Image (cartoon, rainbow over all chains, first blue to last red; front, top):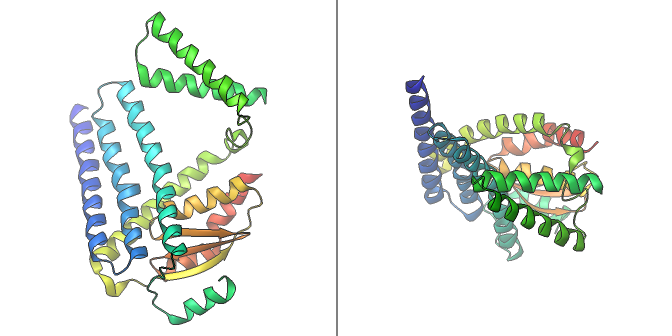
Length: 113
Length: 157
């Protein structure tokens, strides 16, 4: 029983670290501000989530476990809020995203701005 | 109003007990005192209502969370795949999407779910339209199909 908990905890930590590294690589690799924000979304949600779940397997008592659950819920609430605020601030300062199709810009500007 | 107060009290008590871990009489009494202080202050501020304690959501929210977790895992796999495939494989798209939610709470849940899913970020809400930036064109198309919109609208009732 002990060995199963150990191995599954380690597996979750490993996947979480891989996702966090992928998020970092995407942050450096993607072309503009908005696409980079999507890469950070990976680190935000499943990267941090997997690491916290992996740590839950190693928690010695119920109190530590519940604190990890509270931290997980907090990250899941804060992550989207901060990304939304960042994106809105960038949009208000007229940073237009690089888009693939030009007709997308016209469509949005005619219906909205 | 009474129900919301009781619910806030239970939440605060659980939060205190889970965070402190000390079960001596003095610490428990101090906890009770601070919970009562918070209750008095939040009543004076008039914030104890259906907006801060959305009890009507609890019926359906857990099945929604399960579905959302599944969607987040799927979207994560797609985004990580495109991170390693590089810049040529992505197709950034900006679009306004109509939303059908009536209440503020529904709109917030929908926009937050869009942002929580990697690959799509809700930038702004104007009346009943939300501006979404997506990493891939398919993401926008799956949002336009309206599966998430329908599920959030179900929560509202």
